Image 1 (cartoon, one colour):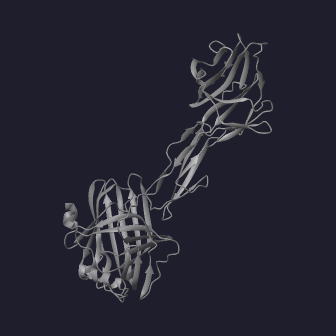
Image 2 (spheres, one colour; image 1 turned 60 degrees about the vertical axis):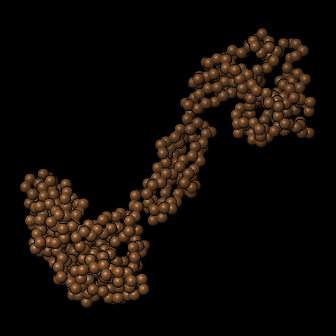
Image 3 (tube, rainbow, N blue to C red; image 1 turned 45 degrees about the horizontal axis):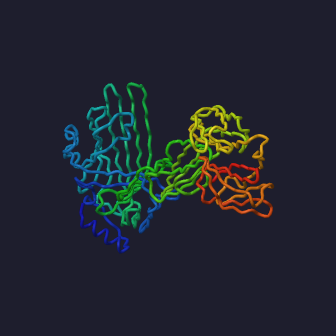
Length: 507
């Protein structure tokens, strides 16, 4: 290609000039050229047929869906049998292909398309490929005429009729007939995502009949096609800077472009989760590919890249992710809530005569049931017999820890031992803690204790904590709890042979 012409084209466009151009052999590809192309789906509202003299086409809204690199080599670098058929009198340029769309049922490797360029025209001489491992040159009986030089705004329409047939013993029969009618129908300024160019616009009507007969299936598949190619040619680029193909209602575009990261848009939320009731988890949308920035819409109506969830029941959470090109993808994850039943040892406080005992029962269906007295581990098992041994005429905090389906829990109560009928017999008093669970402070509602009462908090390990508190006129006790660590506690209020105990949870 002529680099000087290419540089002049860029200079003219930079000045915003429209000019009629002429396409010649110098504007066709050369051996060693590699050209990067983007494939795009056309947006609604684009009409590729619009054209005319001194026309302006704006296709900057095209978005790449995939990319290919089209390379050009000498026919002498292709397999030897191809060189025999596509000799210098037939072709002087070849381009490797990944596949042949007219042979979809066969395994194809080493595929090429062959061209012949001269001062008078540029033609497609045929194809070649190894079909089921057998190298097969497919030379048209008459080359397919792509361009007649010099190509100008007033160039007359031209046409070609090309055909090829192939017999594959034991495999099948294939033939292709293709008629191409070319007409330069406009010139002007074209804009694509890659740049702006002075161009000639060529419209090509292609009529094609492909016939494929597969011996093993005894089935023949004739296919009649009619499609229109709209090509915009500029000086110095080797191939059209933009080609739009319309076949029926389907439009596709291919244009010269820069390198893009076109990894398909995908999102992963990770494996399904299992939570214990009351627990929470963060679900993070891990996005790959597409074109940032991304937008998110969760089934919870959140629009962030992650959400914090704490479902009461097993729930499936979904997210839709869209990128800057309006590509969308979806993902979902299920958060299972494990079945869990809390142990309830009954009343928060028990009064037991010295010398007597009480049997505490955690119930069935639990794992790793462990009993503690004032924070000291005592035994494992479903039940626990409590007496005054080691406690005396005093109280003890009894705690049970357990597991169910991997979720842990605990319950506590206070056991008070006294001499029945004696002077130190305790009178139980009902306490209610509001709110529960608590945060910075809470209110103990009662109607028996005076401001002389002793208020304490007992942890699940038996540690006694002296909190800040104050009595209100109605008898309620306001207790400060901001310094407590999250967990289960007992509030204990004692005065003149009376004791009230209430459980609460610090968040």
